Image (cartoon, rainbow, N blue to C red):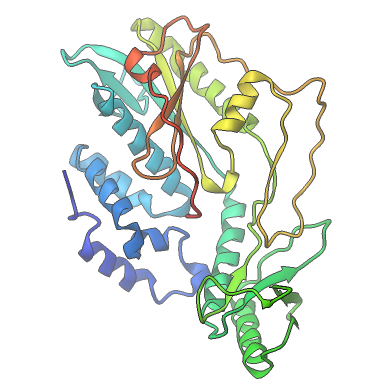
Amino acid sequence: MQDDGRFGPDFVAAHLAAHGKRMPEQRQLTYDIAVEPAFAHWRRWYGEQLALLPQAQGDALAGRLWLDEHFWPVTFELAAGAVIRSAGYTALYEHDHDGLTPDWTALTSSGELAFLLEVHTDQPTKETFGQIRGWKGLERRIAQIPVGVVLKLQGPRHVALRPPDGGTAKKVARELRSRLLGSPHTTRIHTHGYTFVVLANMFGPLKSANGLFAQFAAPSGVAGPVNASRLVLAVDEKVSKYAARANGNHVPLVVAVGSHRFTSVDLDDLDALLDGSPTMNFHFNVGDSFIGTKSVNPASPARWTMPTNLAGLLWLHNQPPFGATARPNSNGHQLMPPPLAQMTQTPPPARSVA
């Protein structure tokens, strides 16, 4: 089924008209996914999933989808519904169970209750979203400079840089444009409290991924140690809230989890926590000068044991078609339904999107 009605050309035109003239730092990070042709298959997938819901529910989720703080939670809720259907069940969204509304209720082909499923998205704080928008805004301004070089900020190694406000970003971009066009061999530019360097190797300046226009390797805004502990604590809370209802109905409780791209938590991190493996990962990109610190005890690595009231976890992949990988709980009071437990698809490599 294909549904271009909700997020087809009319939606793209309306979104461009509403947000395209905003300052770059004032746009949602989801802007490119909402309007760029390269993400048409994403929009088509959202339209298909929303069309499967009752009108009111579909409208409510569509209204939140393009907001930064809601984009991935809505995406993963829709993905969990798609996973349930792919396993051969009927998926009911936020169905009421005597006052409790788990995200999804799965029914068998004969209409019997099969399992309850809750969804959790691990994502950054609201403050972090603001910082990322700030850097993204400066990145978009610099991408308008017609000089095909790559710029990076030079900053202290003991503290993370903060992005400029909108007015300062405009002045910074204007100064960079003037200096790069006026002095083509410039390698370092200091402006408004920021020092930019032109990245180069032994053959000269690196070529911009934007072709004849400048590229800014911005700080990620989320550099630091990668930790899945926050995610599993949220799973524990889900189990505490919904286990009694699942047990009362004699059905399994499953929790589907997904990670916002900016947290860098992936299935390997979750597996390391389940296995008690002494691993340590840091998230950073070429634009980060500070990546944080982390203390670990290799002799006593962190470990998380699934609650016995949890039948298992589904790890939701973060790009279309948003499949899932199962982690059944061998010690659960209820077994994960076989059609879910057999989901062993390897998550695809991550791409850099909102």
